Image 1: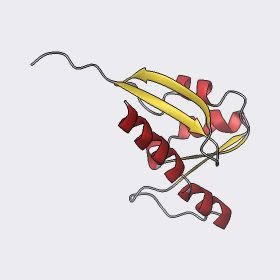
Image 2 (image 1 turned 180 degrees about the vertical axis):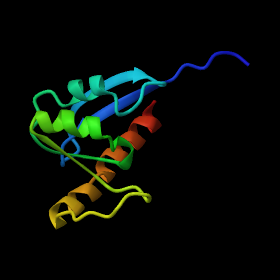
Image 3 (image 1 turned 90 degrees about the horizontal axis):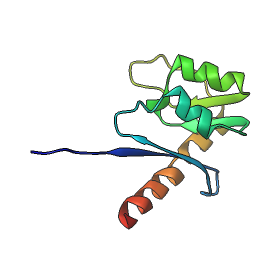
Image 4 (image 1 turned 45 degrees about the vertical axis):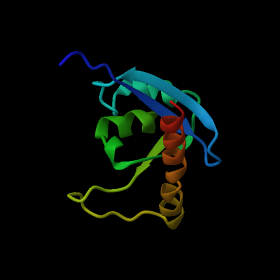
Length: 108
């Protein structure tokens, strides 16, 4: 069949949809890779909203040590935990980054 090469584009944007940082990796690199987040989170503080795929104890600890709070949804097999109303609302704003990804896919 032949060779297939892939890559992943990791994006970080603010609440207005402005690109803050990005990182390009091989397709076989785990999304929760510590090196990726050390690049993406450089100079950040506050809260980082991500999807369920980024749930990782080691990643949470790394970001916590940088004064960044990782906020994600919960997976089906996880216990429900209380989340502030503000975090729930802002977590829904992930659609902004999904729209950016959609635009990039249509352009390329």
